[in-house]
Image (tube, rainbow, N blue to C red; front, side):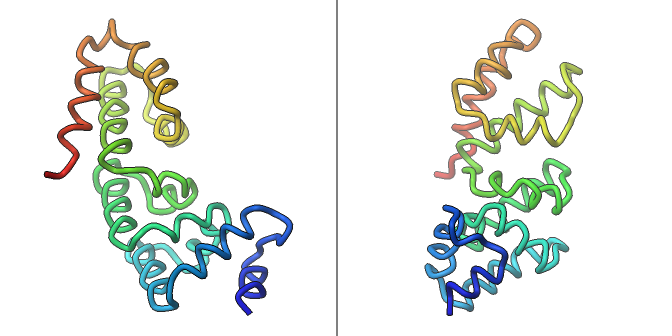
Length: 164
């Protein structure tokens, strides 16, 4: 029955994402699943949009309801993204707010405010998804002449974001 439900969501049983979807779907009760869907819907997203995002990356439903709400709060209210922008890039929901999203968002906002690049969703997502060394080379070290304290700012923001 569960396998049929997952297939009915559009997953191809020959693909790895099918097994991930089964794992994620089976790891929670129906009530927990519904709470997570409603967490996304609180931001004006439809059930279809949530299902589509789940189809792209099933791990978005493995996050806790609290993590979903906190991530959406940050991306929408602090970074000015549309909820649909967040769900069109579902991997960013799974990243650590304290260790990755907040510090890298500060670098992104700092560089954009200095006119070093234009604010753009694709760039922001690329910055969030980049491995640490690549992020440091392309977005921190590259601009250290224009923003001398950028490395310090990046590391300090990560320390300040971690709750006591």
